[in-house]
Length: 80
Image 1 (cartoon, one colour):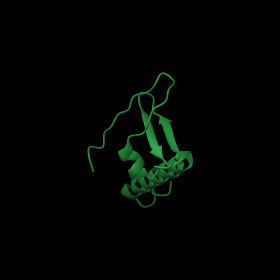
Image 2: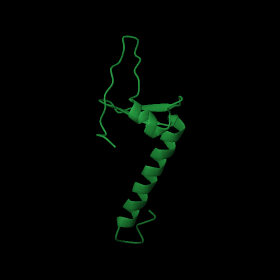
Image 3: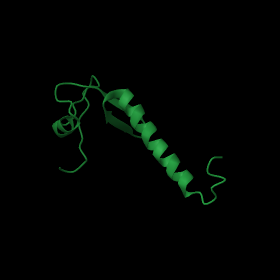
């Protein structure tokens, strides 16, 4: 795998192309959905469309939440 950074140019009509390496890795060579999440000063691009993006975000947040609960030393506070 090469460097995980790439760039593309946006046309005057607002169109751009995903780099071939990303299309191959994400399995969207014959077309497919991607989701864009506006982070304010940046955008996050996710393969699989919005449904997959939401599922991934829910998974990450659940994992982080559970890790936070596990880090609490007092078991009586873990379910509060």
